[in-house]
Amino acid sequence: MTATVRVPRHKLTVVDFQRLGAAGVLSGSERVELIDGELMDMAPVSSLHADYVDRLAQILTIQNCGDYRVRVQNPVRLDDDSEVAPDLALVVNRSYRDAHPTAGDVLLLIEVADAAAAYDRELKIPLYARNGIPEVWMLDATEGRVSCYREPMLGSYRENRTAEPDETLTLARLPEVRVHLAALWR
Image (tube, rainbow, N blue to C red):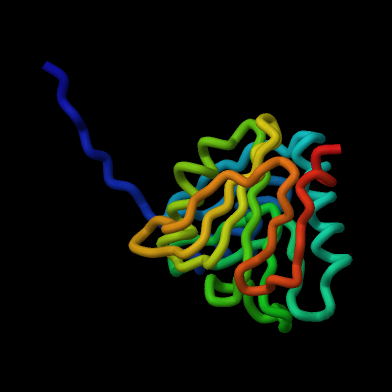
């Protein structure tokens, strides 16, 4: 007979998480996120992953006419128990000196996945939906495809589709912003 032992967990809030960082408990070199009160290790950034992040950042920055900010691997506070570092975030163009953007500031989050595709798909995408992130793109670097998630409702996305390799993606909230996927795969 196998017994299951429940050990109490000590959940952290975003305030606790930020205090750990300020106190030097979490160094800047540690790649961690706070998800639902738990510290989660992030996968190391491979050169393939970094190249896609750089390409997307360049494409989105070139098109920006002041409508949004492009943030690369910077924190977004989703709620009191979750602060994540998506690969790219397009957020409302305002100052974030006093606090990181919140879910309400986000126009688009992009996750680039190679080794951690399941982590992003199974943990982060539902978290984004629960927090009302209007649009998420997940670029699977090893498979060479982009999944698009829109219309969060009840903890999931009503629209979930895989883009065609040569498709031009536009943002629901900024339709003038275009990403030609064929340019990414070269």
